[in-house]
Length: 472
Image (cartoon, rainbow, N blue to C red; front, side, top):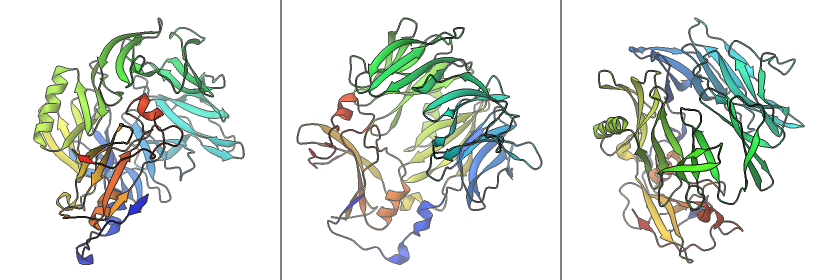
């Protein structure tokens, strides 16, 4: 982070929002519906830590904390079935994640470790869920590098099993895919069958594939990781055709169908001139692709299903000037969690009932922050000295006039990462103290195509910039 002092304006301390208000845990976040729609699970501060709390959808006043961690926050979680929630804990920066489960129906719910992370002299062994197996509510599929640190295998794990700390194993874990040594990620179909894998060795990548009834993989594509490529996004519901993001013969990744047996790209479904496209929106109940999300200056969605497009247009109409997304659905897709947010609003969750077309507020994330006192984030772009268009965002203190101090806050990476529009507590804090903040998606940032990423190679991230900003 770099601070450029241009000139300043002072803000009376009596008018300042306390610094902790911007950075304390949201009161509610990550809401998810149980498959039957009877409960909502949410992350909320308990014992000053982020814990899992459940609410009844028919009576939101019935609230029950089911975890009570005091030293760590709950990280990610999901409903494995109508009773069990599977979750991880924040790893304190070492990227070692264990997987836990808890039965929400018990009077005194008990946390059970399913797969344990291990940190020792040989490296970090960490687990991650790769398939929730919605049609098999008693199991999940987990990627775990317990056998070899550099080679994660796939396991089917029963939810009624447990990890032995003494033996450093779960005796009921069933290996369903053994890593030959260089596979970095696996591809599963909707039934949980292992159908593909990506291997990387140096700069050479391989795309391996097999049919559901086959034992051995075959290499269907080799590629240089810095060249054009096909990235699998998921199977269509026939479990034969795949959806992929491809930049073959083009610069920006676009959404295509793909026949893995013939290694052949099919229909071009959607492309954008400025950014890569990759975020599938699918309906398990209807067994169809509903749309694709992408991020240019703002979050955008291209809808392929007329009914879903009509529904989203109606919801967006109820929240003028806000960004609206459905983040969770019941199994029958009648109940929906609607996430409403903006650049100056931390967000509010709503419960939408498609059956009776009702919409009611659930919880705000950070209700102690007043959107009227927050600042706007505006897309900007400028042309570098070699003619390259570079995008970014500028947050200016609300009500500021004339010049203000400017903070340049670059993202990490440097490759493949980018900054996004939306509510940013850090930048809102700076704005509350009179500072503007600029974020630049410099050359090498992800999402703007292959040529833009390569333009950052050789340390050229900021060598050719010319700061003539255009606010959008």
